[in-house]
Amino acid sequence: MNIVILSRNKDLYSTRRLVEEAEYRNHQVEVIDPLSCDLIIEKEKPTIYYNNKYLDYVDAIIPRIGASVTYYGCAVVRQFEMMNVFSTVSSDAIIRSRDKLRSFQHLSRAGIDMPKTVFTNYSYDVEKVIAHVGGTPVVIKLLEGTQGIGVVLAETKNAAESVLEAFNGLEARALVQEYIAEAKGTDLRALIVDNQVVGAMKRQGKEGEFRSNLHRGGTYSYHKLSEEETKLALKAAQKLKLPICGVDVLQSNRGPLILEVNSTPGLEGIESASKKNIAQAIITCLLYTSPSPRD
Image (cartoon, rainbow, N blue to C red; front, side, top):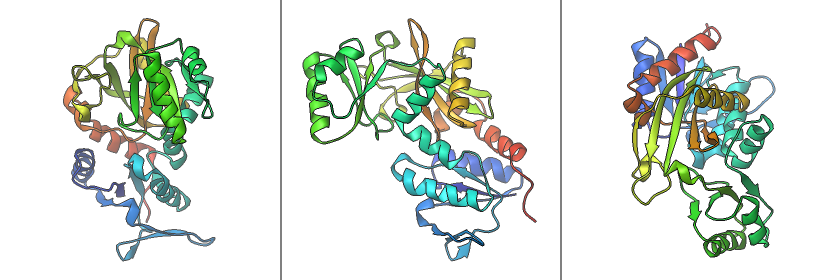
């Protein structure tokens, strides 16, 4: 099988592990930078031109699309879909998951619990917005933020008003969420592959930091999900139509809450914490769910 991994950096841990596992099973695998692809759109034979060749021999792709290149990266995934190439995650599912507001609305409609969230159209009645989520402290998130960037904990009413007014002045759209104090700077990451949890870990933010992102100094450890946490993570992945994803869960006094669903989850932390071969699970899933290779 000819497999393409869409990634801007072949040396990233997650990309390297996927290449290793694909090659171990004697598949042909390439790492292609989606931003270097030319998309040829036509009725008869849509195709992709990359590095002086047409990519008309590809059987399957594994998108590793970074948040900063979502628009063009998803256009490349969509072009492969037009060429009847199997993708482990669809372009529509990636776009849906990257839009925080849209994904929260989908999850809410499905009856999935999450921190209470408010979104307004640059409202200048900031006091009312804060009251909607139960008062301070509140978490304020830029809609386009990722990996903890553009996420602010406002502990007082004055701080929240200042942040929201600043975002409004810049016309930067933001969500306001209730702060789950009992989580104490921790969250859970469940790695879903083909409707199964194949690994899980607990992430702890560094001292004085409410965000648990590993690249911001957070630490991780093995975590065995409860039945309730497992069901919640699987339901969130299913509702967003993400067969492969990372689901972030907060532990609260009212039970587990969905924090976010990541369509391009990193593998390093979770493989280390869970001692599971996640990359192997992804390649195995691809082989069992993709159509037969091209002749």
